[in-house]
Image (cartoon, rainbow, N blue to C red; front, side):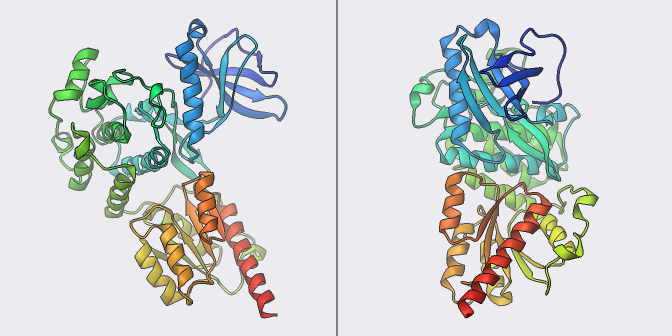
Length: 441
């Protein structure tokens, strides 16, 4: 939902459902047109999708719109576009209301050629994190491609990924939504099993991720043809070109990930997005560290009154090196002492040895994961009383409730704002200090 496009559209100025005024046409696809709209009752900018006028009488396309809303709404994740409303006008038009996003599509970025490995892995890791959540909930996107990956800025974080368009999404629990034998999707990203008309599975999305990774690293698609039938046959039977034949300096570990994702036999790909996510995190640890791009003014020390006294100690447990570096920078400038661990086992050891004033912990890590870390800390008398905060991209209500039920004192969703992070840490420390004082009294 980026910059406004060209010219007059008879729909502009129209108010949909008595509350959404269409202000600008910002994008279109084969099925829908997206507008920048304003919720006139609460003065909020949103993106609103309508079926193309010539297609509004097609019942199966109306079903696609509903499918997109149900699929995306089922998965609450910071890297998936947020669906805010859906309805039908008096004229029988289905509309879909989404968060309004500005940014650049990955396809536009790829027009400039290959992308650095560090940036490519960062983008892929975010997409993978969202897919892991979707797949856990039985949702397969089915049409992942560079056009459906939007790179935005969130807070101070650049290249923040948003996955768009769940129009072809297949809910695994309702196979009627994707009839057996149906061939939908974009040929350049289509897994061999889809070409054969087989049912989509999470491994189908992983194949598309392999195409995206190949494309980011080499600047070209693994298989290309202007002939759709030929391209589909290439996906099914053609030998994959080696990424290092196109980029000789490519890190072998990166090529290993690409080749595994693009296996013709889905059984030879990653078991699921969670397994891939761990390999991507491991790959990130092999790469030179690069902090999140944080504007200089946003990391200036806060006013003296906001700096905690007595230099509380924070332990960060997270295997995402870039995030750890960014959080360390923010906290040190705010007067905290900071230690960090790159996995759960190391975090447990450091918590016992250093007895920090507060722990910030990621959820998805190599075993033990964040939930297990919290469980182990709570069992140990030495660490049981240390305040614990989850710092994670897993934004679903289920994950938040599970985190709080596990005994966490707070749950901060990535991406976070610097001031929010500092305020929440200060609030947790203040609450626990007050609780301790009360018990002592």
